[in-house]
Amino acid sequence: MSNFNLVEKVANITKEEFKEKYLSTHTPVIFKDLAKNWKATSEWTFDFFRKNYGNWEIPMYDDSYHNPGDNYMKPVTTKKFHDYLDIIEKNPTNLRFHNFQIMKRAPELADYYNTPTIMDGFLKFALMFFGGKGSALNLHYDIDCSHVFLTHFQTEKIVYLFNPNQSRLLYKLPFTNHSHVNVLNPDYHKYPAFKYAKGLKAVIEHGETLFIPKLWWHYVYYSEGGFSLALRANDSLKTKAKGLYNLVRLFTVDTGMNFLAGEKWKNYKEEKAKENANKVLRKIYAA
Image 1 (cartoon, rainbow, N blue to C red):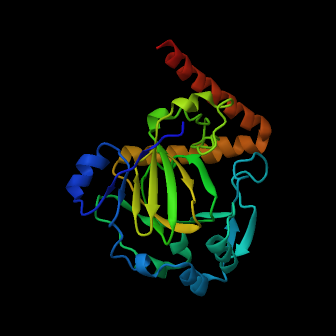
Image 2 (spheres, rainbow, N blue to C red; image 1 turned 60 degrees about the vertical axis):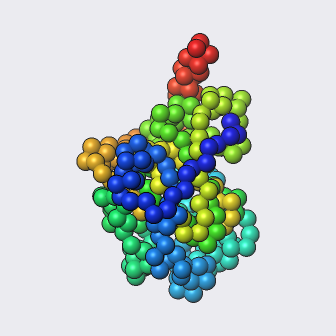
Image 3 (cartoon, rainbow, N blue to C red; image 1 turned 180 degrees about the horizontal axis):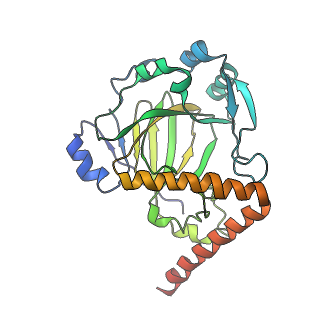
């Protein structure tokens, strides 16, 4: 599949309009102005982080993030923050710095953004993501089942999104929130069902905020080196409970079996994902 419908961009939308058109229907949307009054929108630059936090030693992740074994979902190296910023500002790289609760290390950064009022239930913490041109965060949904508001800065980022009802077509790996399908270069011989998946494409520019509804799959591609801030909201106790269950399952079953079985566990998950996708394919072919 190569065609994606573009995610709509809106401005000056009310809380009520957002709830009716996007939140209640779980429809992705890009806000052009949700962060327009944030200090971060005008002041967060590569130089800002270099000058103020450049001496931090930060963990680096690459495409081996989901390889089985001792380094499963662990950083591959560390770098000084200023060295890493130099790289991603000017050069392509597959090294990423992600899921970092940066406000815990630098609480003053919380003064640079405001908790949105577009909906209730925003959580207290924020995450930041940094990546170089050409790097990508693999296809996944957020395991805690929160709604995500992703604001990008300085450059451009592209996010490919899929409805949760397409999980089998995406070859969801059991006991995880991940898929091994490369959205931009899919192997249709290995993942034939993915041809029938229908996706959306969100192009986020400086100061814009993408709303990713809970459980929506997303593949994050850095078309340019840059960085983003993710805020999360949860409007349901039931969803919070499901998120907690997912976290326990991931960090007990999946990481535990990876430790015990490594490559065999990876192969088992991929075979189960293939079985589930083939069930859908048979229904499609029979229709």
